[in-house]
Image (cartoon, rainbow, N blue to C red; front, side, top):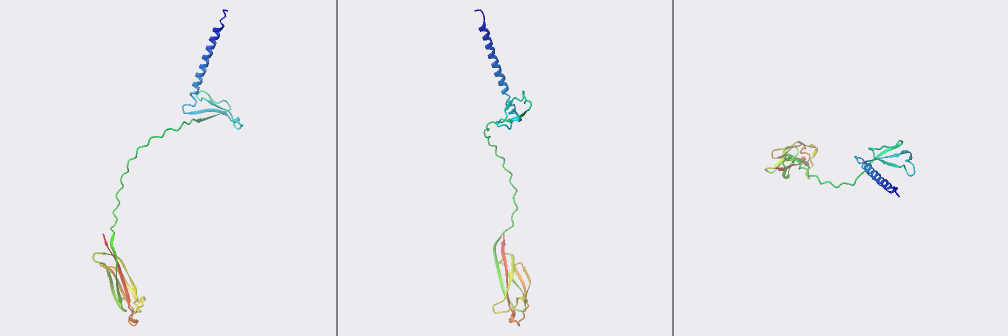
Length: 200
């Protein structure tokens, strides 16, 4: 009746609880290093079983205190967390500087018109005919045309234009009709035209 078995058992039981607590604490410390400080998970696997039906076992290790066994291959990967919230909008950039002004364009033309002047030039005649612009207009261009009247038979191959040029007032054409009077007078019609306008 004096054997104190119960107290001894009680002390042993309490000690067992203490060991269990110590194991749990130690386990929690090991877990804290997986993943490591760089958020990387480390593990080990065997290459020999990688082609098996169920693959090869994977062991997770704390790289700070453990390493892979001989014949095992180390492997590591990152743990990706959930997406973060959208950042705030950035500030608007400053306005760019104004560009330089372009060059002024050339003056335009107003009051554009074409003036014509016609004259019949008989055979053996040499003369200058002008198509004049209205007062205040500038000469912009000009030219001429040669025809034969309906009742004449002047040969245009014998008609020569020596000059066609702008003057201060219009467009001038110098013509020489070398048809002789024996060929039904050889008259041709010279029409001079000039383009006129006001440069503003």
